[in-house]
Length: 389
Image (cartoon, rainbow, N blue to C red):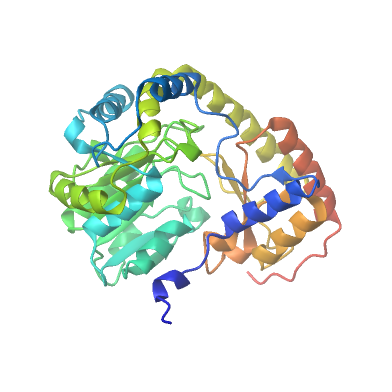
């Protein structure tokens, strides 16, 4: 029997680490979850209450493939409050998580063979999904000198104009952001060169240094991707949204109706009330900030002193080249010997990621502090690697 090459993309190693960590926990062994890219808090109380009401009063059937009107209106209202942008219901499409949103966006905007540019390091699903769809992925090496973000100068230096560019701010795994002026310059460059900008804004709301800008502030040709998973603390509800240029609405409508019929109905009714919970959600961000400060203070004390700035999101991206050039094996041994789970950098950077790990600080503060102590003791026992720079 034939096997499609689409299924041969690299796995999402962070999820395999998560499975191994859960297996260790189920075996009764201690685990410190610094790997999971999800909040350690439940959905807001307003969301939970709305879900209970919906379960008691609605049969939870199919909805419009683009989402219930109330949710699309609520998302549009969020853009007015948060960014001062006029967004209408017609601009908003509810999706099955941001993952479903990226799939719809990539399918609607790009054909097989199209070149799409990404920052490296970056979220692996961009690269892997685009590859599975037959697109040609070009990764721009983005180091600390540009805060791990693409620049207009780097885009100008490309040997050919791509069909698309994916920008994430705040970014996974580094947590770095592009400034509003930088994002505006990138969006303007994309418009001038006929390049479709995909702006990943799923960590908006979780920032510590400056405020992020929405790509639609500059260009309505951009596709904006967002999610209820991160700031809104609703990962398992599998709900996100797109802001779409008008010409892509019908293609996405056609694709969405064939792929998933509609986003999860219960999650849609509940998420309408996520926008009533800003105070509760901002309290979560205050805890993330405290955890971030703890890591940025303690990690250099245990030898991890080359860190991405972590302007937003809830990750620290750490250089571990003093000990290894194989972050996957390094992390597996760390988990096996100590119970500390981290995500391997190879997920986010297939070339240089063997020298990095990603640590999440979205969990419990006490657990994070304990994990750092354990990690420090373990690192002190490890031989240094020979590093060629």
